Image 1 (cartoon, rainbow, N blue to C red):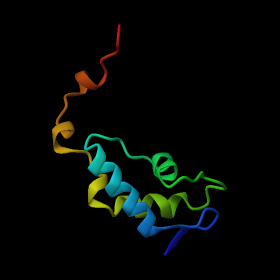
Image 2 (cartoon, helix red, strand yellow):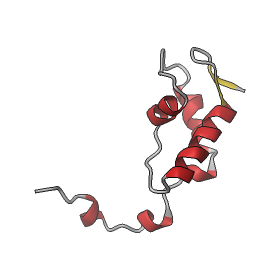
Image 3 (tube, helix red, strand yellow):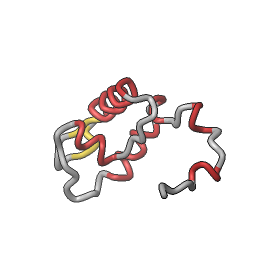
Image 4 (cartoon, rainbow, N blue to C red):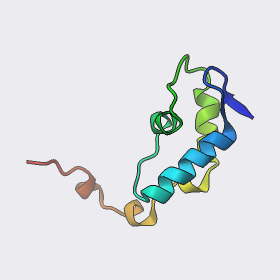
Length: 81
């Protein structure tokens, strides 16, 4: 199914990009922008974003790795000094 008509991105393209990113870095934060870049494309009008995000959420590899899911909030807010 075509998700982004402007850039001709399919649901398979999105899933393949997520799977590739997760395989190459299991701690990666996967965003729509990173998926576009992985596919060598750029977002255009943005009308596809609701469907794009819904497609991303269906991929099991999108979830936060278990090692990061239990990180205490105080560690998430540390700033470099």
